[in-house]
Length: 116
Image (tube, rainbow, N blue to C red; front, side):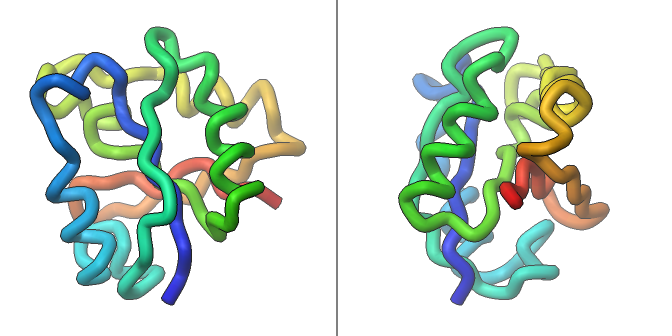
């Protein structure tokens, strides 16, 4: 079972407990189909707009055992507040030595920062 970390939008912490994130990861559904069932070892916020702490938090998750880091749909698609964050693409461009983008077409999650 692959160990993953999930980064979520700080603005949605009060309205979304992340239960679907945990459920989909455990079942290997949605974007996690490519990885199969996953164990969530960390669930952190982006640190607030514009998400400039996301790379540092992804690095922290990897240091604590995550094999991949997923960006929750609240960051990539703006669910449920309809405010998608453009920063994941910006971070990948600014930190190419630290990040690799891997996007999944299925499900409600985008697999994001994968540390090398």
